[in-house]
Amino acid sequence: MVNDETQRKLRQMKLTSMANALEAQESNTEYRSMSFDDRFKLLVDAAYASLQSNKLNRLIKSANFRTNEPCIADINYLPDRKLDRNLIQRLATGTYIQEHHNVILMGASGNGKTWLATALGIEACHQFHKVKYVRLPELIDDLIVAKHEANGDFHKIIERYKKIELLIIDEWLLTPINDEQAQTILELIEYRSQRGSTIFCTQFAPEGWHNKLGNPQIADAILDRIVHDSYKLLIQGDKSMRERYGIGGEFA
Image 1 (cartoon, rainbow, N blue to C red):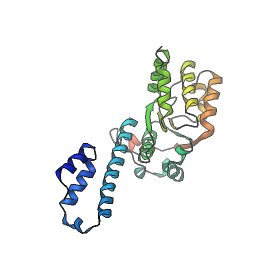
Image 2: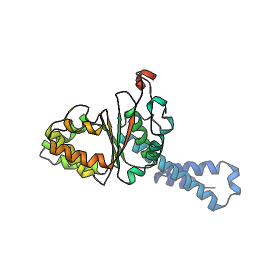
Image 3: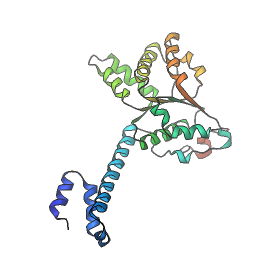
Image 4: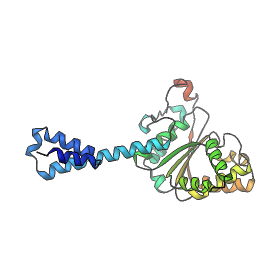
């Protein structure tokens, strides 16, 4: 029998899951016939599973998704949506993140772009990638404010975004941006180039981005760094998903 002192030490070392598993073994006579190696393996498995579960929960929380419900398995492949199932399944493997490719999700308002991007983001969290969801207006505000500060916060923010393996930018170019904003976005994209992947959720095909990006030279530079290195997925539909399922409903 394991004494209370051993249990206390396990919990003090923050090995609570192992302590709980050990307590369960001690209270169940079926474990007594098992070898030390087999019982120890079960203890390690319990501790490891708890560690991974806690890590996943932290990743999902820090990603700042609007909702944590979307799931790849729940995607609704209605005929009128014309979703590319093969591409979605390929993206779900996370290979594009390992290869630092981007994704452009296109579709009208309410067609499920944010939901699908979040499902891909949550899947990436399950693969233990660091993910961040942000709306473009919020992203621009954070970067511009930091850029005007004299304390070096801009570079700190850029460094933080460099460490994000999958960045999801919602409402991409929903409204035009000015030259300063475009230049700032270009800097972010350049810093993240070949370091991380980005999902752009937009109502517009890349062909319509140029006149929304201010200075033509900056627009060219942004497009060059995004478009040629991206998977493109168009979400269609005779009705928006809000019309199908209601304003408060979750939809894929």
